[in-house]
Length: 141
Image 1: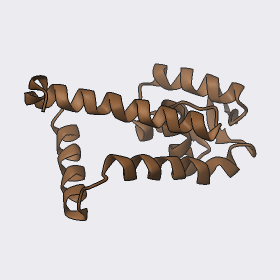
Image 2: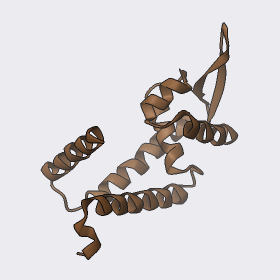
Image 3: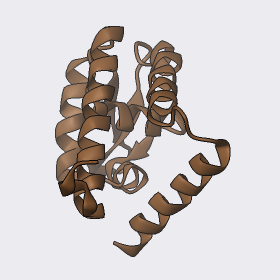
Image 4: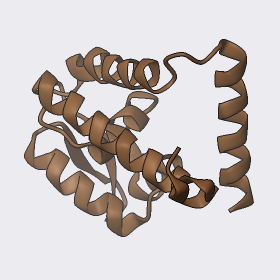
């Protein structure tokens, strides 16, 4: 193993870089025309759309400013739309479009391929432990 990987911080950062690059490549190969960040937003909306940007931000664990840029690009791709909230001129809810609905299976398929490649050679117990450690890291930070 490379000497630099004796630091768990560097190892985690570099593993995430490889994860991102692999996910981006798979998304490009599928021709979906979305980025890994946009995939996170769509995946979250597949679990329940028609929500405010603040709620979506919390569910995606993204800042509102970051999310706004992702939504702008998804709107240009005609995958989401912003719908005004009656009685509140400053608010709107985010909805998936008809164009986005059939992509659900392809997006989850990409996510499954990434997970399969990422965890290749790991037992179910190791994969479960890895998930627990990642959640603990997230909670700790």
